[in-house]
Length: 262
Image 1 (tube, helix red, strand yellow):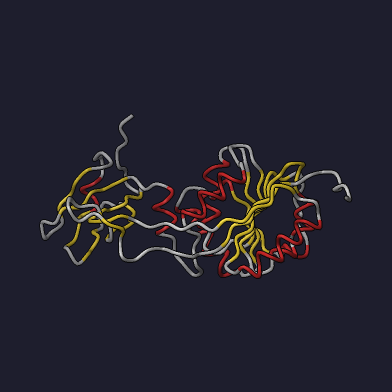
Image 2 (spheres, one colour):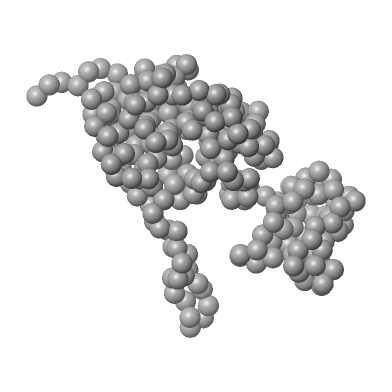
C-alpha cells in the first residue's frame, strides 16, 4: 500500500550518501541546509520517496525513515552500536516477536531500539542504565522511533542482580560483563542466550571464563569488520576509509544442568 507523508511524520531527507537529515514535517516550518531551505509543509500528502527541490533548486528525496536511519540519527551522548554488530546480536540471540530481553547498559538507546523493533508487538525489553542523563536521552530517541511502548527503562546496576526471570536473552554492553554472568544464568530460561559486547580482548577472556564456570554452552566470540565499495565503471574499489574494530561479540546459551566433570 502506498504511504503518504502526514503532518508530524518524520522524513529522511536524502541529498547524497554523506548528507542526510531526519526531520519532522510541520506545515509552517522550513528546513535549512547549505543547499537551500525546504518548505516542509510542501511534503504533506506526498508519497514517501518524493523528490523535492530546495530554494536553491537542489534536489532532495523525502524517504520514510527505517530502523537504520533512526539508529544513526540518534541524539548521541555515548558511542552507538553499529549495524554490523547489532545485526549479529539480533540473529545469534534468536529474539523475536514474543521475546523478553534484558539489556545493559542503555546508552543512547540505539541497540535498545533494534531489540524493541524485533520483539514487538508482544515482547518486552528491560533496559538497565545507571546514569539518568543517558536514560533520559535514550527515552527521547526511543519515542522518536516509535518504540518506547515496548521498552521498560530501569535505573540500576545489573552487576548487583537482575529482577526479571524466565528471559529469552540477556544482552550486555558494559565494562564488567563477567560480573553479570551469575545473575544472567539465574534470570535466563533454559537455552536462553547471553550476548556480550566488549571493546577489548581482556574483557572477553574474563567473560568466557565466567561462562565456562556456569556451564554455558555454544560459547563463541566474533569480531565483525565491514568495508563499503566505491562503485563506478573502471574505478570500482574498496573505499579508503572503513569502520574497523568496534568490539568483540561473545555469544552463549544456557544449559540447565551442571556440566559433567571429566
